[in-house]
Length: 448
Image (cartoon, rainbow, N blue to C red):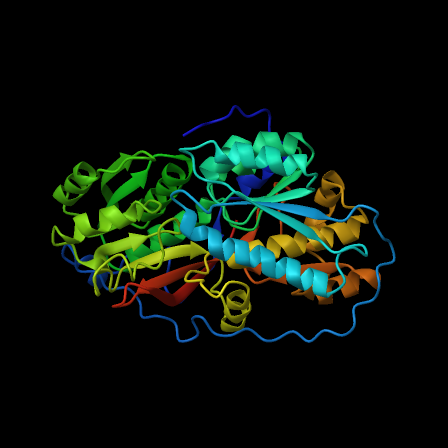
């Protein structure tokens, strides 16, 4: 992992840290200590709450009228770059994120574009932390004069380019970074994200494992900013709920052998195992299940909750569960994404990517500028305090009619802190079926 030195953070960001996490009560009972009945479960006896009946329901279609013409036009069209993975250990996240960006661009331009000009987008690969692809891609995007770069997906990758991007006066807007480190990064007000910090995902997952009746948990963790940060928050929540972490084994990006970590975790005889990895799960899961661990004992995260229908034999993951920040992708949104990319299998962070395009575009309209530093000054304002709207056409109509807006998007309610973080978010919990594909089970909503 490449780490970069951080300068003194903004005072507002320090204030954001002091707020902490306050989860709302849900049907899952997250945050409560296991009951006497649940606590009597033997190793491997996991009984999670039944899926919610409304999981994955369709959203209500938005009716919009004619969009008024821009009152201010720009000689320089808004140009966005994307820095999303098409290679590397998070390559499975690239297609839904890129589709989300392209859908957002399509809808913005269908509504007349930003400040009278169509929005342009340039896509580049982010790779992963084993390569220098992200730096090369960032240099190319900055050379083309982009106002904002959407990406990276990996927190570790973002750490290698954040200073390069924000130092150039360009917005970095990640749809998937979850490392808490970015909350206090000295980014000159130019780093934003629609994915919540892993303070929230970690608390939800740790509480949920306890709710399922586990008293002990073992963890296999990617040794980078994402993995260790998320593991820290899962552990804190699980222990606060009365559980005990009995094994925590690390591995590094680029490792291909995981037998040692698996053997040590299984030897500790945990009730549940949390896999905090990227696509290394393809190698780790067979090792674990081959040792007799039931899939219902496995809990995964956004870095590896993916479609494994072509990787494992049927039933390998049946009953395993995983968390992905953000609300469930609704059926009508999925249809729009499939029209952009018919080959999509996963929808992780598609909503967050789509929302990034809309928020940047709306902030440019509010700023009456396509300059990155000016757009950044309006991002918080378009996310809070005004009239609710959920797509570019309806929101820009309000703006051009002199109204204040509060954008809520496909990823859920979006209200930014001064640090550029979402202040509230949902964490989706998904359950694997016999075909090794995951389906929505329930959502946990929380505030940061």
